[in-house]
Image (tube, rainbow, N blue to C red):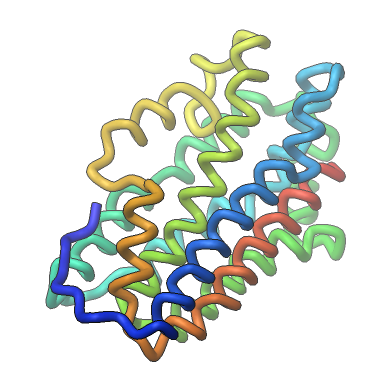
Length: 239
């Protein structure tokens, strides 16, 4: 949820940039929805094989907590900054659910021993996972404007929504949906009760109120973030 702000008359250049930015969200969401991990989840294979990627998520989930801290404003001075902080407040502790799920499924994966799990976090083969956190961190630090940060948060929200659409049916078919916190029912029900959310209207409004001098810059930023999320999901599919 964002607070409406007074809009000024837009120039044709701003209208075109707004369209291109909204298009980046549409194309990025469509591409991510069809990533290799989601395709693997649809395959007729054992659920344990489908979920082999779960340990490889460790760096991302723990790093996500740091992103929610980086994105915050220590002394928010307007409603938009407060809205960013609300997103942070609502999403900062999801890592605890992930660790619960990882413990619940311990032993079901190759390399599930603690030392192997930690070692694999830093393996050369998982650089795309780490690069995702580094990329978001870099842009969050670079852009302090609350609308720009809200748009970055929207990339995370949209891609996780697409992830849930892919994994929830598989968990329900395997009678795991109600047993898993991060991947299943608890996370979903908590998200439904959040005061923040995503919608096409919200993205459209954010693109309109984004400061004019940032509109052109944010187009490649959003493209880069969606591409990195896709690369990470592709890496997970290779688990």
